[in-house]
Image 1 (cartoon, rainbow, N blue to C red):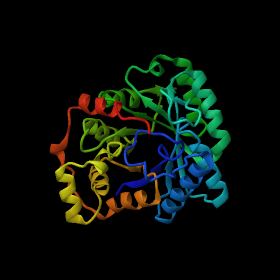
Image 2 (cartoon, one colour):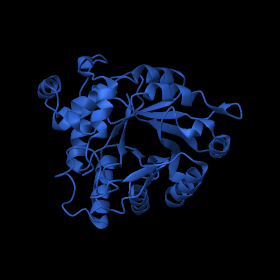
Image 3 (cartoon, one colour):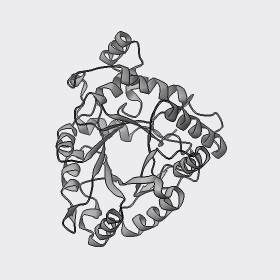
Length: 306
């Protein structure tokens, strides 16, 4: 069965687009309060057997919080992945128009990898391009691809995450990339949920080709937990779990999934998410809930940072 991983997008900065965070996070989201909240969820995840954590340079201070937690606790069995490409620019404010800026350039990669390595060092076993799209300049930048190849050759596994209605095109194009005659990327992290399953066939192909498949946003940024469709509510009642667990159980049911990400913002949310492991669904369950991909992504783009 797939592993669970804890994603730190909602815990490393005071604002994010996930729904259902308002009462999960500290009332005063200063750095110390968010650090304590992040460490509490990491402790609960570790106690529950979760040994994977996913961060990113753009998740505010997530890498810093994670590095402090790893040093304080002394854990050596936690598998860390992080991402480069977006830069956090909100300066710990919730009322700004722009929270992060994307750039897939050699300069951005070089600087952000140095920052990640300084904080997390050998803990990082997988480093991903953040939100790669089919039109990314990465594909036509031989200097950047060469630098990525050198990092791969040093022993760090490389991957990429995807977003948007053309995720499938990106998955196939990126996994076809070779540097020095070897596949560049060994892992892919994509958005898949019962509202937006369009990337599924491409992820199945990726899995069959040997890539490790991570699924993010399995709860549709909280939509499936806060305002679930009737079919999700009915299954939740049947299995005596929350709708969040049903949404993540639907992800776990896909035979091509290796890692399921929880974006929990509190210990209670994490424990509720992990109950997905108690629910057995068939891969086709809830398939009739799919929205047209462009509509889904337009709705996601309209979510407010709060």
